[in-house]
Length: 221
Image (cartoon, rainbow, N blue to C red; front, side):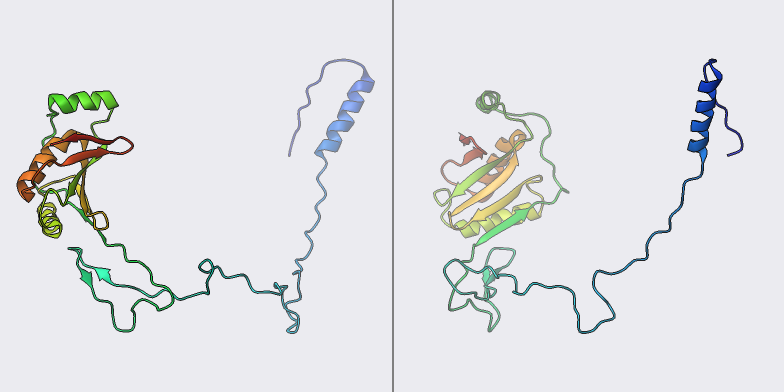
């Protein structure tokens, strides 16, 4: 620092002298202390003294009320939802069997034929959308049951082919085999168009129901 300018109010010489002394003390270089040398908390060079470790091993969490068992892989599903046999020697264990949830997803590609972007809701559905204050881009699902088709697996395979060739863009489907249902998800804006396409493409009988989260069944066709 080359020069310091000190501004003060004119007054007694004693006050000016004290102010100069205080400024000089503030400008004195700070004392530099070298940092202490690093010392590990345990001696590294000693081979017989190791770092402190717990006396007991950590507990292992197993199934409630039973001994620890090794989970073995079960059968797998292919793209069409068919069960494939497991590899030899990898079957379910004898002590505890893991239930296999037979569930499959199918998602359509975004290329190909696009759904109509204009709002084409019927008067009845438009009234329900206004009543429940639904957003047009909110997701809803069509539920297909065994009452709508004689063979649910055949309907699922036909739906996969339809989604693969982008027949229903922006839609995705899920088969719930434990419920014997097929769920087809779409936007509220396109739900009527998707529902008509499902009934024509899958040749569904009866009425299919449109379900919205937390509202349940709100529409059918």
